[in-house]
Structures are given as C-alpha cells and as structure tokens.
Length: 398
Image 1 (tube, helix red, strand yellow):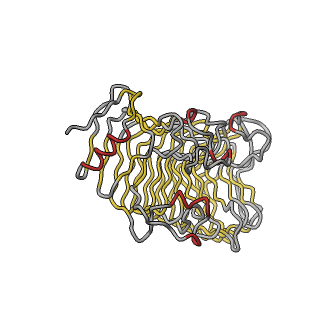
Image 2 (tube, rainbow, N blue to C red):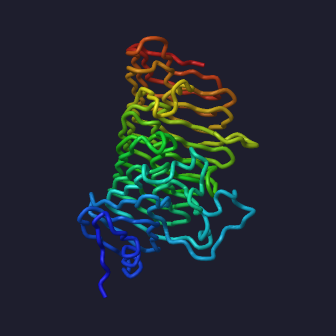
C-alpha cells in the first residue's frame, strides 16, 4: 500500500513522513511538495539514516503544535536519573542515555520553518514551558547523544529560540546553513543559531549566513547534560545586524581547542564572547583558543532586540572569573562607524596566562575614544605585534 504525502500546506503530513522514515532502510529522498510539508509533531530519525529534501522545499510546523520539528529517535522507557539533571530538563532528555548513543545521522536540504508567530511565545522569555500541557522547548531541531551527525545545505526559519541544539554530540558537521529569522515571538531574544551544549567534541561548523538574535554559534559547556567541549572548528560566518557571532561558555566544565575564523559582519552585542555566565565554585577554564581572520564592527541596537540602554560590549569581550591558559587573536580588522567602544575587553578577575595579539587594525570613524585593548584582568605573558590603531603603530608592552 502506497503512503500518501499531501504537501499542500493544509493536510498534516506528519504520520506519512514518519512512516516513510521508518520503512526506508538507510535513506529517504523526499520529492518537492506542491506547497510545503505540514507537520504537527517531531520527525524522529534513527541511526544510520540520511534524510534529503530539495534545497528549497519547505517543511512547516502547523499552528499551535508547540514542539520540535526534528530530533534523533528516543528509546521509550529510557529515562535519565532524576538526581542527575535539573527538573526542567527531564522531558527534554527523556528517552536518551549516554549508554545508548545514536550514530550516523544526516539531514540535507529544505527550509525548516518553525512558524513561531503561530506557536506559543518563546518559553525562555515567557517562562511557560507547558503552554498546552506538553513540554515546549521552543527549539527547532534537537540532537542528543549522537556519534556522527551532519546537518547541511538548509534554511532554518523563525524558531521560538534555538534553531539547532546539539547535546553530547561527537564527530559532527554543520555546514552551508542560512538563517532566516523574523523578530521573534514576542521579541527578538534568545534566538540562537547553532547551540552546542556540554559533551560535544570533534565538530566542524562552517558557512553560516544570516542574522540571529542571540549567539549565531554558542559553545556552552555548562548547559543541558553539561560537560567538557573540545576540538571544534568554526569558520565562515556572514551576518549583518546580528546579536553575536560566537559565544564560548565555561563555568564548571572546560572549553578547549577551539578555532574561530573567517567572521564577517556587524554585531550589536559582541562578535566573540568568552564567558562564564553561571556562578561556579572555580573559574571557568579555556585553553587552546584561536580567533583569526575577523572582519567585524558594531551594529546599531534597535528596540526589538530588547537591549537598548544595556551594557555595551566590546567586539571581543572576555568576562570575569575565567582562567584562560592560551588565547591567540590575529588578523582582526575593525572599521567602526556606529559605536566606538574598545575592541578587546578583559574583565576583572580573569587570568590569561599566554595571550598573543598579532596583525590587528582598527579605525574609528564614529568619534570618541576607541582603545584597541582595555585590560582589567591579569595577563601573565603577552606577545603583541603588528598592531595599528587609526593607521598608527601601537605598542602594548606590559
């Protein structure tokens, strides 16, 4: 018996799509829909599986569905221990375990439209995670405990908050992604692009285009299952009027061996933030962090971002309470027309043991003071060379 796909944007295709996934052996290549595929619950992908859509075929979340669009298939009855996770994460992680990891999942193509104006408001903003009785994360895609994941050549459209969340995912690639975000529901906050949580390792994230209204890429070691993050390459970010390019976050777990490069655009918070955010017993720890080939400046803040009147961050902002073993910033070029805040800021109570600054140029076209570096922390060893501020060589000898 054939499985009918409507693809008309009116009839619900969830059951048919899931049946096609479940009956395909290792790959499902979907045809172009007449209008779009409408779904009302998450599509569940098994291990050793590849889902392919035409590049601009739309999958749209039906109004009032208030759920993920795509996730790796959970195991019924497999529940995390109550004493190991926060209560709010129970429903989010239900069915997943590090002892039963998924493997080898690919998603290629499509426009994945969360349709946020027709869903409940962003729960990170409203604090209502059960608007209709079922848990509502506001995320578009979520992958937990996967070894071998690729998300490629697709558009992520209008999530309530995070477009893609990776949690304890290893050997992954996220590439050729377009972000097509509206200004949110109710406002443009918490709308991350690629949100990488604790336990992620050996990943490449590249060729990302379009503005996000929180971190375009976030590596947050202390979120969700929480754990170290290491060995990540992020390159090729292109965004104007975006919140930030990359956030690195360590409070209780380390973030190490991260290379961020080829960043282009304007950002109204920071371009790269090295942060702690959460309270912790010890300092957040970073090592082997390289930032290079960054061509960025500040973007104007508008009311819908919810940031007006708040603290104005440097393009490269380093929070207090951190221990950074090794940090290199090179080939950073800033031509500032909007906000003449310092280019690099190191906060009080942060120690950087080895800092390299090389081939950095800044030009202030906005007026006012715009120092290249403001250091309130403790730099143990500094190597600074080829620094130019408004066309003049700059000596940063400590």
